[in-house]
Length: 373
Image: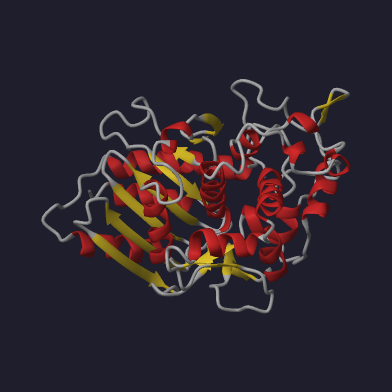
């Protein structure tokens, strides 16, 4: 992700330190306190609607609330939270012996497709990239979405300005080949968040299964979990999902939302995202022991780290010495969507603040929620 998002998370840290230093009123029922948090989040200046689901792992508490122009049953774009669903699919395929995370992507994608994708200082590395490296954002590949081109433009900037457009994976690869990679695949301690990685993973999944990614999500996740309001956005005339916001205006980019696909195209509700999140951490799709393996963290930008298809928000004691903020694991989206689990509190949190210009607002909200438990 680029500098604007990095700065947003720094602001979220400062905000979090303040919030967690304040003690909550324990005698007030949690449901009332959580609803108050949502209502206060909606200011009709930056945030116009919010929805959240909060559950304890032992099932002793389950709550869904909303405020502003969103309702609890309204589907919304979960954006890059989709990547956690891709992780579930890939780990399931591995558990079935159909792939290895250390397979080179050249095993599944044609040489002419990959040639020129990762060329660093005159050396071609495209054939040596692995599935694991794509999942972990350690391939070094450029980001077709947020990375600036030589003229200073980027797809993110164009979409944020309301210039809707569509693309396919071939376009993604062609544009990525025009950009410079950041480091050798798998270089120790290096990670760079790139949506290009997950476009490639979507293509690999289709190759392995023989199914379009839309059908894979349905057969592997949506149907087994009986999710009725969750689907991969594929029809630009579909007006069911809540309209995204960029600052104070609605952001109507249906062609783009169709095009994101495996790196950010799922639509869901807060409650159904919760069903998936709990299934993910319960090992419903893959052996639960795999959860330890994917927690191999690299810095993306402070305070976010990336594992193998999963992210972690973690602040050290130095930044919150009086009331430490416990780590949370899961994924967020540039839309303001979030799906995270806090092991220390055994607490799950899903939802959205539905604001593209301020994705840090979702982390501010989660920090507040954690402070109530």
